[in-house]
Image (cartoon, rainbow, N blue to C red; front, side):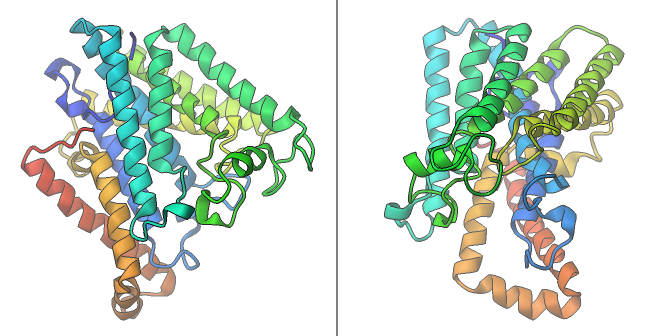
Length: 373
Protein backbone atom coordinates (compact mmCIF):
# COMPACT_ATOMS: atom_id res chain seq x y z
CA UNK A 1 0.00 0.00 0.00
CA UNK A 2 1.65 3.29 -1.02
CA UNK A 3 -0.97 6.04 -0.86
CA UNK A 4 -4.06 8.34 1.35
CA UNK A 5 -7.45 9.55 2.29
CA UNK A 6 -8.63 12.51 0.20
CA UNK A 7 -11.14 13.72 2.73
CA UNK A 8 -8.65 13.75 5.62
CA UNK A 9 -7.23 17.26 6.13
CA UNK A 10 -3.48 17.35 5.88
CA UNK A 11 -3.49 19.39 9.07
CA UNK A 12 -4.83 16.36 10.88
CA UNK A 13 -1.69 14.37 10.10
CA UNK A 14 0.95 13.88 12.82
CA UNK A 15 2.96 17.02 13.49
CA UNK A 16 6.02 15.66 11.71
CA UNK A 17 4.00 15.11 8.57
CA UNK A 18 1.71 18.13 8.61
CA UNK A 19 1.28 19.75 5.25
CA UNK A 20 -0.41 23.05 5.91
CA UNK A 21 0.56 23.95 2.36
CA UNK A 22 -1.66 21.18 1.01
CA UNK A 23 -4.67 22.44 2.96
CA UNK A 24 -3.91 25.96 1.71
CA UNK A 25 -3.65 24.76 -1.89
CA UNK A 26 -6.89 22.79 -1.53
CA UNK A 27 -8.60 25.79 0.03
CA UNK A 28 -7.46 28.14 -2.73
CA UNK A 29 -8.80 25.64 -5.26
CA UNK A 30 -12.19 25.43 -3.54
CA UNK A 31 -12.41 29.22 -3.22
CA UNK A 32 -11.67 29.48 -6.94
CA UNK A 33 -14.32 26.88 -7.71
CA UNK A 34 -16.93 28.79 -5.70
CA UNK A 35 -16.02 32.04 -7.44
CA UNK A 36 -16.22 30.80 -11.03
CA UNK A 37 -19.34 28.70 -10.40
CA UNK A 38 -21.25 31.61 -8.87
CA UNK A 39 -20.63 34.64 -11.03
CA UNK A 40 -23.49 37.10 -11.17
CA UNK A 41 -23.75 36.87 -14.94
CA UNK A 42 -21.60 34.52 -16.99
CA UNK A 43 -22.32 36.54 -20.13
CA UNK A 44 -20.62 39.52 -18.46
CA UNK A 45 -17.47 38.10 -16.89
CA UNK A 46 -13.72 38.42 -17.11
CA UNK A 47 -12.33 35.84 -19.53
CA UNK A 48 -10.03 34.14 -16.96
CA UNK A 49 -13.13 33.37 -14.85
CA UNK A 50 -14.78 31.43 -17.67
CA UNK A 51 -13.98 28.01 -19.13
CA UNK A 52 -12.48 27.83 -22.60
CA UNK A 53 -15.22 27.43 -25.17
CA UNK A 54 -13.65 24.27 -26.59
CA UNK A 55 -9.95 23.71 -27.38
CA UNK A 56 -7.50 25.70 -25.27
CA UNK A 57 -7.59 26.63 -21.61
CA UNK A 58 -8.12 29.39 -19.08
CA UNK A 59 -7.15 29.56 -15.37
CA UNK A 60 -10.68 28.35 -14.58
CA UNK A 61 -9.98 25.11 -16.43
CA UNK A 62 -7.21 24.31 -13.93
CA UNK A 63 -9.51 24.21 -10.89
CA UNK A 64 -11.17 20.80 -11.15
CA UNK A 65 -8.02 18.89 -12.21
CA UNK A 66 -6.16 20.63 -9.38
CA UNK A 67 -8.65 19.21 -6.89
CA UNK A 68 -8.23 15.67 -8.24
CA UNK A 69 -4.45 16.07 -8.10
CA UNK A 70 -4.56 17.44 -4.54
CA UNK A 71 -6.68 14.46 -3.55
CA UNK A 72 -3.89 12.21 -4.78
CA UNK A 73 -1.30 14.01 -2.66
CA UNK A 74 -3.46 13.59 0.44
CA UNK A 75 -3.95 9.92 -0.40
CA UNK A 76 -0.20 9.35 -0.32
CA UNK A 77 -0.07 10.45 3.31
CA UNK A 78 -3.28 8.87 4.58
CA UNK A 79 -2.75 5.46 2.99
CA UNK A 80 0.80 5.32 4.32
CA UNK A 81 -0.59 6.01 7.78
CA UNK A 82 -3.08 3.17 7.41
CA UNK A 83 -0.30 0.87 6.26
CA UNK A 84 1.83 1.84 9.26
CA UNK A 85 -1.05 0.87 11.56
CA UNK A 86 -1.08 -2.56 9.96
CA UNK A 87 -4.55 -2.20 8.50
CA UNK A 88 -5.67 -5.36 6.70
CA UNK A 89 -6.25 -5.17 2.93
CA UNK A 90 -9.94 -6.06 3.21
CA UNK A 91 -10.48 -3.28 5.76
CA UNK A 92 -8.68 -0.77 3.57
CA UNK A 93 -10.58 -1.73 0.41
CA UNK A 94 -13.92 -1.70 2.23
CA UNK A 95 -13.13 1.77 3.55
CA UNK A 96 -12.26 2.98 0.04
CA UNK A 97 -15.45 1.52 -1.43
CA UNK A 98 -17.69 3.07 1.24
CA UNK A 99 -16.07 6.47 0.91
CA UNK A 100 -16.31 6.45 -2.86
CA UNK A 101 -19.96 5.42 -2.59
CA UNK A 102 -20.70 8.24 -0.15
CA UNK A 103 -19.09 10.83 -2.43
CA UNK A 104 -21.03 9.53 -5.43
CA UNK A 105 -24.31 9.60 -3.49
CA UNK A 106 -23.76 13.20 -2.36
CA UNK A 107 -23.07 14.14 -5.97
CA UNK A 108 -26.35 12.58 -7.07
CA UNK A 109 -28.18 14.47 -4.32
CA UNK A 110 -26.66 17.78 -5.44
CA UNK A 111 -27.70 17.03 -9.03
CA UNK A 112 -31.24 16.20 -7.90
CA UNK A 113 -31.67 19.22 -5.62
CA UNK A 114 -34.08 21.02 -5.55
CA UNK A 115 -36.41 19.52 -8.18
CA UNK A 116 -35.68 15.83 -7.48
CA UNK A 117 -36.73 14.90 -11.01
CA UNK A 118 -35.26 11.41 -10.96
CA UNK A 119 -36.53 10.56 -14.44
CA UNK A 120 -34.13 13.13 -15.88
CA UNK A 121 -31.50 13.09 -13.14
CA UNK A 122 -28.00 13.86 -14.35
CA UNK A 123 -25.87 10.92 -13.22
CA UNK A 124 -22.32 12.23 -13.84
CA UNK A 125 -21.00 15.21 -11.91
CA UNK A 126 -18.07 16.73 -10.07
CA UNK A 127 -18.33 14.65 -6.88
CA UNK A 128 -19.13 11.55 -8.91
CA UNK A 129 -15.90 11.97 -10.85
CA UNK A 130 -14.00 12.61 -7.62
CA UNK A 131 -15.49 9.37 -6.22
CA UNK A 132 -14.48 7.30 -9.25
CA UNK A 133 -10.97 8.76 -9.37
CA UNK A 134 -10.57 8.07 -5.65
CA UNK A 135 -11.79 4.50 -6.05
CA UNK A 136 -9.65 3.52 -9.02
CA UNK A 137 -6.55 5.46 -7.93
CA UNK A 138 -6.80 3.83 -4.48
CA UNK A 139 -6.88 0.34 -5.96
CA UNK A 140 -3.97 1.13 -8.28
CA UNK A 141 -1.96 2.67 -5.43
CA UNK A 142 -2.65 -0.33 -3.20
CA UNK A 143 -0.79 -2.60 -5.61
CA UNK A 144 1.79 -0.15 -7.02
CA UNK A 145 4.96 1.67 -6.10
CA UNK A 146 6.02 4.89 -7.82
CA UNK A 147 7.09 3.11 -11.00
CA UNK A 148 3.70 1.44 -11.19
CA UNK A 149 1.92 4.78 -10.75
CA UNK A 150 3.91 6.22 -13.64
CA UNK A 151 3.15 3.25 -15.88
CA UNK A 152 -0.53 3.29 -15.00
CA UNK A 153 -0.72 7.04 -15.74
CA UNK A 154 0.97 6.58 -19.09
CA UNK A 155 -1.24 3.61 -19.92
CA UNK A 156 -4.47 5.43 -19.08
CA UNK A 157 -3.49 8.50 -21.09
CA UNK A 158 -2.32 6.45 -24.08
CA UNK A 159 -5.47 4.32 -24.03
CA UNK A 160 -7.68 7.40 -23.95
CA UNK A 161 -5.73 8.93 -26.84
CA UNK A 162 -6.24 5.74 -28.85
CA UNK A 163 -9.98 5.66 -28.16
CA UNK A 164 -10.46 9.31 -29.11
CA UNK A 165 -8.30 9.23 -32.22
CA UNK A 166 -8.57 5.71 -33.59
CA UNK A 167 -11.97 4.22 -32.70
CA UNK A 168 -14.39 4.44 -35.67
CA UNK A 169 -17.48 6.01 -34.12
CA UNK A 170 -20.67 4.67 -35.76
CA UNK A 171 -22.37 7.38 -37.80
CA UNK A 172 -19.24 9.53 -37.61
CA UNK A 173 -15.59 8.55 -37.97
CA UNK A 174 -12.41 8.09 -35.99
CA UNK A 175 -10.59 11.08 -34.56
CA UNK A 176 -13.51 13.54 -34.40
CA UNK A 177 -12.87 16.06 -31.62
CA UNK A 178 -15.75 18.44 -32.33
CA UNK A 179 -18.71 19.10 -30.05
CA UNK A 180 -20.64 16.38 -31.83
CA UNK A 181 -19.50 13.05 -33.27
CA UNK A 182 -16.69 12.29 -30.82
CA UNK A 183 -16.16 9.00 -29.00
CA UNK A 184 -17.31 10.44 -25.67
CA UNK A 185 -20.64 11.40 -27.18
CA UNK A 186 -21.04 7.93 -28.65
CA UNK A 187 -20.58 6.18 -25.29
CA UNK A 188 -22.48 8.70 -23.14
CA UNK A 189 -25.47 8.83 -25.47
CA UNK A 190 -25.57 5.05 -25.60
CA UNK A 191 -25.35 4.44 -21.84
CA UNK A 192 -26.64 7.62 -20.18
CA UNK A 193 -29.20 9.09 -22.57
CA UNK A 194 -31.53 11.42 -20.69
CA UNK A 195 -29.20 11.59 -17.69
CA UNK A 196 -26.53 13.94 -19.03
CA UNK A 197 -25.48 17.53 -18.41
CA UNK A 198 -28.47 19.87 -18.84
CA UNK A 199 -30.11 17.12 -20.91
CA UNK A 200 -29.41 19.14 -24.04
CA UNK A 201 -26.14 17.45 -24.92
CA UNK A 202 -25.65 13.85 -25.94
CA UNK A 203 -22.47 13.71 -23.90
CA UNK A 204 -21.34 14.92 -20.49
CA UNK A 205 -18.18 16.85 -19.51
CA UNK A 206 -17.88 14.54 -16.48
CA UNK A 207 -19.02 11.48 -18.40
CA UNK A 208 -17.86 7.90 -18.53
CA UNK A 209 -14.96 7.86 -20.98
CA UNK A 210 -13.34 11.14 -19.97
CA UNK A 211 -13.01 9.81 -16.43
CA UNK A 212 -10.17 7.59 -17.69
CA UNK A 213 -7.57 10.39 -18.10
CA UNK A 214 -8.79 12.20 -14.97
CA UNK A 215 -7.66 9.19 -12.92
CA UNK A 216 -4.15 10.01 -14.15
CA UNK A 217 -4.44 13.46 -12.53
CA UNK A 218 -4.98 11.72 -9.19
CA UNK A 219 -2.11 9.31 -9.79
CA UNK A 220 0.23 12.22 -10.54
CA UNK A 221 -0.85 13.67 -7.20
CA UNK A 222 0.08 10.40 -5.52
CA UNK A 223 3.53 10.65 -7.08
CA UNK A 224 3.90 14.14 -5.63
CA UNK A 225 2.82 12.83 -2.23
CA UNK A 226 5.54 10.21 -2.45
CA UNK A 227 8.13 12.90 -3.14
CA UNK A 228 6.99 15.00 -0.18
CA UNK A 229 6.94 11.94 2.12
CA UNK A 230 10.47 10.95 1.17
CA UNK A 231 13.53 11.52 3.36
CA UNK A 232 15.16 13.76 0.75
CA UNK A 233 16.24 17.22 1.81
CA UNK A 234 13.98 20.16 0.99
CA UNK A 235 16.09 21.36 -1.93
CA UNK A 236 15.93 17.92 -3.56
CA UNK A 237 12.18 17.73 -3.05
CA UNK A 238 11.69 21.17 -4.58
CA UNK A 239 13.86 20.19 -7.53
CA UNK A 240 11.83 17.01 -8.08
CA UNK A 241 8.54 18.91 -7.96
CA UNK A 242 9.86 21.47 -10.44
CA UNK A 243 11.13 18.77 -12.83
CA UNK A 244 7.81 16.91 -12.74
CA UNK A 245 5.89 20.16 -13.15
CA UNK A 246 7.88 21.56 -16.04
CA UNK A 247 8.11 18.13 -17.70
CA UNK A 248 4.36 17.51 -17.63
CA UNK A 249 3.52 21.02 -18.81
CA UNK A 250 5.95 20.56 -21.72
CA UNK A 251 4.50 17.14 -22.56
CA UNK A 252 0.98 18.58 -22.45
CA UNK A 253 1.94 21.37 -24.85
CA UNK A 254 3.71 18.89 -27.15
CA UNK A 255 0.78 16.45 -27.18
CA UNK A 256 -1.56 19.36 -27.90
CA UNK A 257 -0.31 19.03 -31.48
CA UNK A 258 -2.06 15.65 -31.80
CA UNK A 259 -4.78 15.79 -29.15
CA UNK A 260 -5.63 19.42 -28.26
CA UNK A 261 -5.79 20.61 -24.67
CA UNK A 262 -9.53 20.49 -23.95
CA UNK A 263 -11.22 20.45 -20.55
CA UNK A 264 -14.62 19.32 -21.84
CA UNK A 265 -13.06 16.24 -23.43
CA UNK A 266 -10.42 16.00 -20.64
CA UNK A 267 -7.87 15.06 -23.26
CA UNK A 268 -4.61 13.36 -22.37
CA UNK A 269 -2.75 16.59 -23.12
CA UNK A 270 -5.09 18.42 -20.73
CA UNK A 271 -4.46 15.87 -17.95
CA UNK A 272 -0.68 16.24 -18.28
CA UNK A 273 -0.75 20.01 -18.72
CA UNK A 274 -2.94 20.60 -15.65
CA UNK A 275 -1.01 18.09 -13.52
CA UNK A 276 2.20 19.87 -14.41
CA UNK A 277 0.77 23.17 -13.26
CA UNK A 278 -0.41 21.49 -10.05
CA UNK A 279 3.14 20.27 -9.33
CA UNK A 280 4.45 23.80 -9.78
CA UNK A 281 1.69 25.39 -7.68
CA UNK A 282 2.25 22.84 -4.91
CA UNK A 283 5.99 23.45 -5.02
CA UNK A 284 5.39 27.16 -4.46
CA UNK A 285 2.81 26.56 -1.72
CA UNK A 286 4.97 23.98 0.06
CA UNK A 287 8.10 26.14 -0.09
CA UNK A 288 6.38 29.26 1.19
CA UNK A 289 4.08 27.74 3.80
CA UNK A 290 5.79 24.62 5.18
CA UNK A 291 9.45 25.37 4.50
CA UNK A 292 9.61 29.16 4.93
CA UNK A 293 6.83 29.20 7.53
CA UNK A 294 4.38 31.75 6.10
CA UNK A 295 1.43 29.89 7.63
CA UNK A 296 -0.42 32.96 8.90
CA UNK A 297 -0.71 34.36 5.39
CA UNK A 298 -2.22 31.07 4.20
CA UNK A 299 -4.77 30.73 7.02
CA UNK A 300 -7.71 32.02 4.97
CA UNK A 301 -7.26 29.21 2.47
CA UNK A 302 -6.47 26.61 5.13
CA UNK A 303 -9.88 27.26 6.71
CA UNK A 304 -11.48 26.47 3.37
CA UNK A 305 -9.20 23.53 2.71
CA UNK A 306 -9.80 21.43 5.82
CA UNK A 307 -13.54 21.16 5.02
CA UNK A 308 -13.39 21.28 1.24
CA UNK A 309 -16.13 18.76 0.41
CA UNK A 310 -18.55 20.23 2.96
CA UNK A 311 -17.95 23.76 1.67
CA UNK A 312 -18.32 22.71 -1.97
CA UNK A 313 -21.56 20.84 -1.25
CA UNK A 314 -23.07 23.76 0.65
CA UNK A 315 -22.04 26.16 -2.12
CA UNK A 316 -24.01 24.08 -4.62
CA UNK A 317 -27.12 24.00 -2.42
CA UNK A 318 -26.80 27.70 -1.60
CA UNK A 319 -26.52 28.62 -5.29
CA UNK A 320 -29.60 26.55 -6.16
CA UNK A 321 -31.66 28.11 -3.37
CA UNK A 322 -30.62 31.63 -4.39
CA UNK A 323 -31.55 30.93 -7.99
CA UNK A 324 -34.87 29.13 -7.43
CA UNK A 325 -36.17 31.65 -4.92
CA UNK A 326 -35.25 34.61 -7.11
CA UNK A 327 -32.93 35.96 -4.42
CA UNK A 328 -29.93 35.91 -6.75
CA UNK A 329 -31.61 38.10 -9.38
CA UNK A 330 -32.97 40.49 -6.77
CA UNK A 331 -29.60 40.83 -5.04
CA UNK A 332 -27.58 41.04 -8.23
CA UNK A 333 -29.87 43.55 -9.96
CA UNK A 334 -30.73 45.53 -6.86
CA UNK A 335 -27.30 45.77 -5.25
CA UNK A 336 -24.32 44.70 -7.32
CA UNK A 337 -25.39 46.25 -10.63
CA UNK A 338 -26.09 49.47 -8.77
CA UNK A 339 -22.55 49.82 -7.48
CA UNK A 340 -20.44 48.44 -10.33
CA UNK A 341 -20.30 47.90 -14.07
CA UNK A 342 -21.81 44.59 -15.29
CA UNK A 343 -18.46 42.81 -15.60
CA UNK A 344 -17.31 43.94 -12.15
CA UNK A 345 -20.73 43.30 -10.60
CA UNK A 346 -20.56 39.73 -11.89
CA UNK A 347 -17.18 39.18 -10.23
CA UNK A 348 -18.25 40.90 -7.01
CA UNK A 349 -21.28 38.63 -6.72
CA UNK A 350 -18.98 35.62 -7.03
CA UNK A 351 -16.65 37.03 -4.39
CA UNK A 352 -19.64 37.61 -2.10
CA UNK A 353 -20.42 33.90 -2.38
CA UNK A 354 -16.83 33.13 -1.41
CA UNK A 355 -17.21 35.37 1.65
CA UNK A 356 -20.48 33.75 2.74
CA UNK A 357 -19.05 30.26 2.40
CA UNK A 358 -15.92 31.32 4.26
CA UNK A 359 -18.06 32.24 7.28
CA UNK A 360 -19.50 28.71 7.23
CA UNK A 361 -16.02 27.20 6.94
CA UNK A 362 -14.71 29.48 9.71
CA UNK A 363 -17.43 28.33 12.13
CA UNK A 364 -16.55 24.69 11.46
CA UNK A 365 -12.86 25.43 11.89
CA UNK A 366 -13.35 27.34 15.15
CA UNK A 367 -15.39 24.46 16.55
CA UNK A 368 -12.72 21.99 15.37
CA UNK A 369 -15.29 20.23 13.18
CA UNK A 370 -13.70 18.52 10.19
CA UNK A 371 -16.28 16.81 8.01
CA UNK A 372 -14.93 13.45 6.87
CA UNK A 373 -16.92 11.15 4.60
